[in-house]
Amino acid sequence: MVHLIMDARKLAFTSFLVLISLFNQVQAQWPMPIEGQAFSDYLAQTDRYLEQNKKWIVVNNKESEKNAVMPFEIKPQAGCQENGIGVLLVHGLSDSPYSLRSMGKALSERCLWVRAILLPGHGTKAEDLVDANRNEWRAAVKHAVHNFAKQTDTLYIAGYSTGGTLAIDYMSRAEVPLAGLILFSPLLKINTNADWLTPIVGSFVNWLDHKDSDDPAKYASIPVPAMAQVFHLATEVRKGLKKKPLALPVFIAMSAEDKTVNSQTTLDYFKKQMLNPISSLWLYSNAKVNFPDDRVQEFEAYNEDLKITGLSHMSIHMNPADPYYGKGGVYRVCQWYDDELLSLCKQDKGGWSGEKGDLLTSKSRYGARLSWNPDFNRLVDQVSLYMKATAIKVNRSSK
Image (cartoon, rainbow, N blue to C red; front, side, top):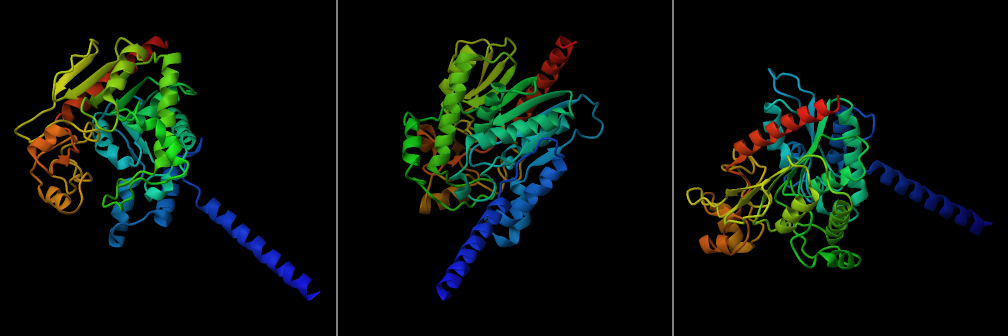
């Protein structure tokens, strides 16, 4: 009898632990846009989640670190003539909405209504990307588009890196018609011939490199399973484009020297699978590419006076005036280095920067990764004019 009582107590205790575990899993569920949800409710939901789950770099800076990764909404500036155009911003892998904040602010100043979402697995700690799934990212974009479209006349997705991949992917299963896509350094292929190995390696190894971040807006390391998710997503997008090319207008801005994504793959797919005659690609390069497509415009990226060897993956869409990543910003991107070179890079605020490569190394043995675009204002003007022009064409063609 005593044994039965003890077994019953053990069973009850085990059941209690299971319930607690399930409760914690429900509590820890990632904040996602929900169809029909007010954006203010999504912001409040995300704020609560980050408060409980974000890994703080400096505990006394909790509020600023949380704000750095929060989704955001910026409505058109006062005095704007209402145009009904909305832009949904989608960040890249290991990043956060902060990477698109200065772009969002600039677009709102040009009378566009901007929203940015936080993708699942981001904004808290890099370990949360281990179990992230591309279908969760797809769902976040889908629901955010659904809700924003109900409040706008014309809607665009502007995606950076993996956010650009998700923007193209959305068009393969779009439930809401978009007027066009704006893509900054879009990831159609990871810039390595070994990307196909990530699903294999990721099945038994989580990390190849695991560093604590000193940047509250971005993870310092990416788990291999997350890289595998991006590999699968990019592969699916390329297959989808070959099966059904994009007909809607697309504007792309990217660097030929990008070390994160394969820029040649993007150029090839732009020429063959993004067929709208008014689609446009701005290519920044420190050497002439002469790509055979009249829709591609090349811009010189090398700047001796500014000590810039070329634009990096992350610099394309960043304002030089950004207080964090900008020209005079507090954060200098030096993640390529360790120990003495890291310290020298961080201290050399006025030194050379660009994308990793021989040219940058020839200028400085501790050159930084460029995190802003000296051509930012002209780029933003072009992006906003492009959206307003294509929005008019879409609206006229629908009448």
